[in-house]
Amino acid sequence: MEGKIGMDNKRLAERFLVSFIEDSLTGCWNWNRRIKKPGYGRFVIKVIEVYAHRFAYELLRGNIPTGLSIDHLCRNKKCVNPDHLEPVSVRENSRRGNVMDVKLCKRNHPQTPENKFIKKSGKSECKLCKKFLYERAQKKKRAERIYEW
Image (cartoon, rainbow, N blue to C red; front, top):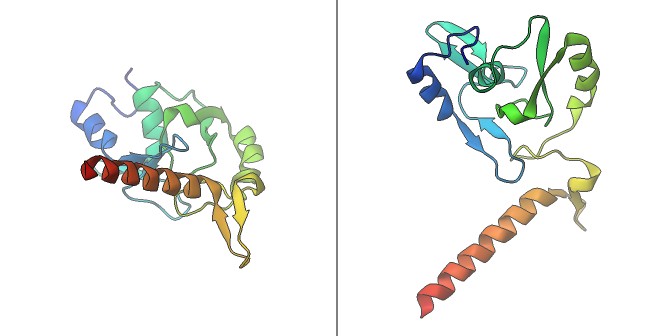
């Protein structure tokens, strides 16, 4: 599966594979290295900087067909999960990109009406984050009960 950027380099692939954190709720692989101004991850190969999502696609799926760009199906610019990436024409990517204006919570979940909980105070909370924190607290309680015996 060698792409344009020399995927045969095992050390390069290993360095890439430790450069993101998987979000278990969304399935996104959030890039946790260098982020450039528009919000996309950057990966350095020798002295050349490339978009991390394009590198991920070529590493794990193969070449990006000539003339196509990569669209984030998850709408998360930091995501490098190839299952969330699709090669499309520049025109199609631009058309789809109009929905990229969706705000994200601090854990990169989309702040859509379906995922937003409005408190009595008027502040909003992310339902996915709330669920994650609740489940984490429940696991902690179960673990504490085990040690009580």
